[in-house]
Amino acid sequence: MDEFELVAQYFSQGRVQAGVRTGIGDDGAVLEGVPGQDLVVVTDTLVSGVHFATEHSAGDIGHKALAVNLSDIAAMGASAGWALLNLTLPRADTVWLENFSAALLELADRFGVALIGGDTTRGPLSISVTVGGWVPSGQALTRQGASTGEDIYISGTLGEAAAALALGLDCQQQLTLLEGELLHRLARPEPRVDLGIVLRTLATAAIDISDGLLADLGHVLAASGQLGASITAEALPLSPAACKLLGKEAALSHALAGGDDFELCFTVPPERRLAVATLARSSGLTLTCIGTVTPGGGVIVSQGGAPHVAVESGYRHHWQADG
Ligand code: ADP
Ligand code: MG
Image 1 (cartoon, rainbow, N blue to C red):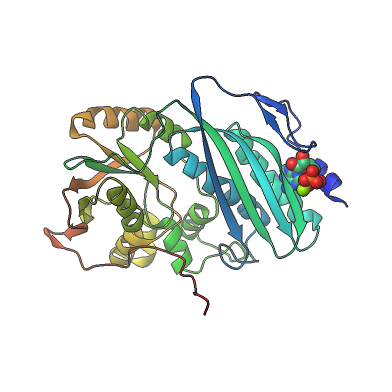
Image 2: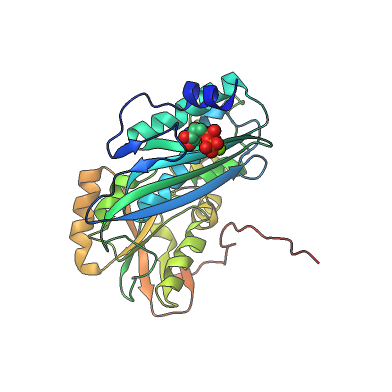
């Protein structure tokens, strides 16, 4: 199978996409501009052995490769428009490709994303996705903009993906219902795109939690001007499944420092509390206030009124410097 056959067979969405003049099959894709809108572009790469293990299912990898990008689009308050897929494959494994592309295109269809092109090469398995989306001009939600005294909110629950990793769960095991819930959060994260769009008019800053709450909230506070935060441990939306399987202390430390949840963390002036509550009801998402922005002094997590023991603040790649 050559590259053309492979792309035609597995990556054709089979329908006309709004705003796409020329899609897959030419030297480049041609998109209509959208008057009054800014283009938001995000990209993320998943490398086998680094971001997932070879035993991960092809469907989970296909879903996650697009989902992590849509999560960045959500954190910017944009609506998703199109995607480019750069695929490096060790071989053309038809069963793998079938499952990978079905999950990726299912997510793309659900969010109205047109796959407009990409590249296919041979080599160690690696998937790089670029997504473009639109926001009304000047209204992108960024990490800057939080102010002292604002409420800090989290969507959904935290620490479930990290709990799945800590328990060493994978799809080849026989899992209990609770274990299955945790693994689902790690393998099939749900990007909060609809929430991000509404937050454009409510939140002052936002970020998606990919590296852990403490690390990612730290990025918002730094970008907003070396601010701090006071977080109440009891307020954190812990995972019931993680609490049952690992105990409350472990669930708490996964909620603070575990990555891969892909929930949104955002700041809102206190006078908009009612609007956030209304949004929670209409969206069906849990939106939890976990603390407030302070003038400085880092992130302080208190439990029972006293400062909580410091935890590792999230995942970071460390590069080995040459020479
Ligand atoms: P070129 O040599 O001009 O870069 P390619 O042969 O690499 O063209 O690709 C042919 C067409 O298929 C292009 O439109 C490209 O965007 C698309 N394409 C290639 N690989 C993928 C992929 N993995 N997913 C989606 N589209 C792809
Ligand atoms: Mg090419």
